[in-house]
Length: 350
Image 1 (cartoon, helix red, strand yellow):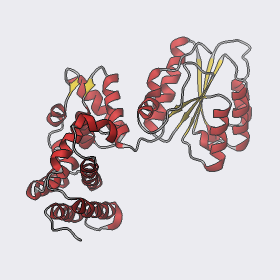
Image 2 (cartoon, rainbow, N blue to C red):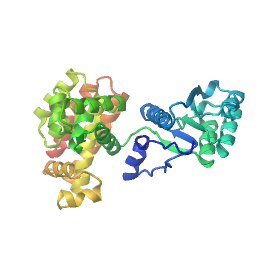
Image 3 (cartoon, rainbow, N blue to C red):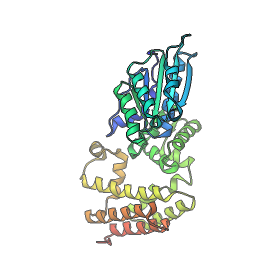
Image 4 (tube, rainbow, N blue to C red):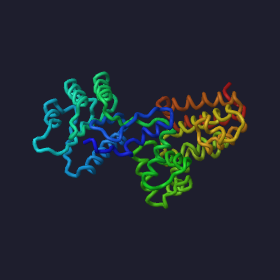
């Protein structure tokens, strides 16, 4: 089984995080034991299916069996992993490894220390399960299993990189502002984003810009939280309220709108505190794309440090309100728009 190479696509999140602040877990090109570790269902499912596909590409007659860890007993595991009288290669997929009982976890770890070269063992594990689950994931890692990260993506930069990587996989090219526009239009769910990337590449020449996204998601992208935030940050209250009310009317969730407002204030504060300089010079220090810095530099005109402090307090209260602290989330957002604009114009809460 040593000649089965793990597909490069299953390590995409590791590569994304290697470019950011999260260290990547090195994944060897071939392995007898693979641990898919993380709670993002799409990434975990993709990692397992593509690892199995790579095994089948190396040997079309390979036998594949899948088990749920919670229902598997050591006896069944031993039978599948033991050398076959008839030869042939096999893949054993154990899903939901965090549910494995103590004796099964011990059996899996013991096997991983001395795997059969004709068997590929793939264990998916959410990373949860408390101390019980940690014993298995740590044990497989220590035994030399190849680890494919599949943790939930929470950082905006990683989500942008995921979208751009997904478009590249489909044979297209996506600018960073286009990726941000697509996330604003579609949301943060990776399955929805994957489907949107595939559709855009199929329906265009593959070169996806912010204008492309706006054209295909007209009525959604143009009333995103970022539209509301951009108008608010320059003090254009009528435009911000119009965009906000239309967004709520067409069903945009209040939470990403509040998040966009908070991101707008934070971005302007970071860029303003960085001092003068070209966007390209500041991009490396701030960890932001140049286009986003240029936009924030324009929005920063008219803001004072005290006003930004007031605005940060407003957006923090707004986030708390839309995430459970208010019975009327739309009103909480409208109030935040007025308050942020008032802070910019010198009428803050101080």
